[in-house]
Length: 184
Image (cartoon, rainbow, N blue to C red):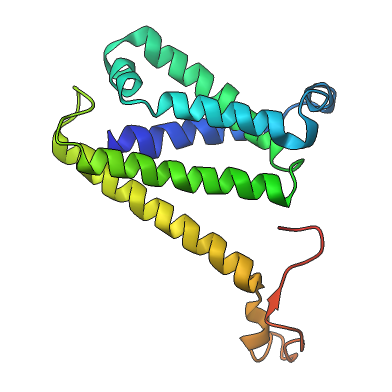
């Protein structure tokens, strides 16, 4: 259960993300017409990923070959590809809402898997379910802390503290916390 949710599904989404980056310009432009400011693609990715986090579908993808084939086709095409096409187009607020919903989902699912006295997936033992719950809560907490640090301090520039460059030049005197324009 842990391997399926934390390794297999993310790797399928990464494969779709890389596919989305490799799309020809003409295809990406036609998709952009339907993806105003990245909202449509991010909603599609959220719904598709929520669908594949349901315990019943995790079970079915292990026992039913057609459900497994559907998972291997839909996660890259409906999660990864829309993320690749939508994330660069979305603004600060849209990205923030998407990331906060991701954190809330990690906490909700982690709590559900952790406190449920019953096995939610028949193919996995209760200890694997509870381990997954602990990992999801920890992942949500780490993502929340990373976003909070980024919002509070921006990008941390280590060159300020490097002292000297390898070729003997002194490090530039610039602020330690910088966020270049246009980057988030």
